[in-house]
Length: 144
Ligand SMILES: O=C(CO)COP(=O)(O)O
Image 1 (tube, protein in one colour):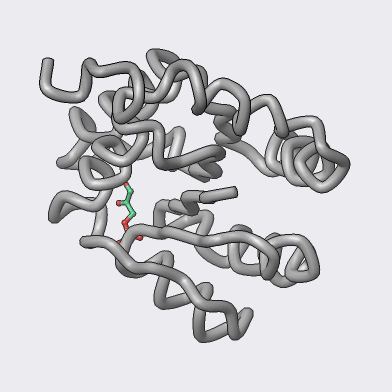
Image 2 (tube, helix red, strand yellow):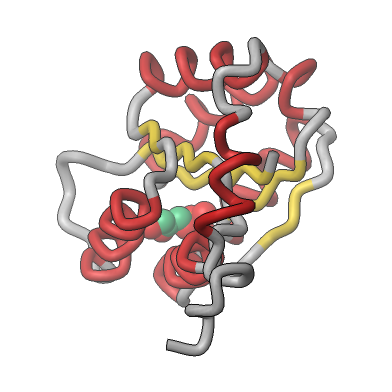
């Protein structure tokens, strides 16, 4: 599975600890992350992470573009629910695209834990099936 990981500053430590706790699962998958989140995870968890731009510089939009192309299977995004951020439109757009593409999305630790355990137990294997029929790459709508 292709897993995208994003955390705003207040939750970066939480996400790093979460990835370390479930490293035995994460290490079996391809990880993507926004810039600073990815650096923190790769340094602390010693996992390979494909790092995109930092969120305020387009990282959320890069992940959104991957989701639009059905290239991400699961997004864990520990967003800051208190502070307003300058790139709020990018954040909203990313969350919206998850709903457009039916991508499992966790915005807090409780849901993230359930999704990761569910994935480990095969509950997200429907993603492989849906990709065959619903992928913009395969159903001919990628140029629309
Ligand atoms: O701002 C972000 C997501 O909106 C996260 O970006 P960083 O991982 O670069 O801090």
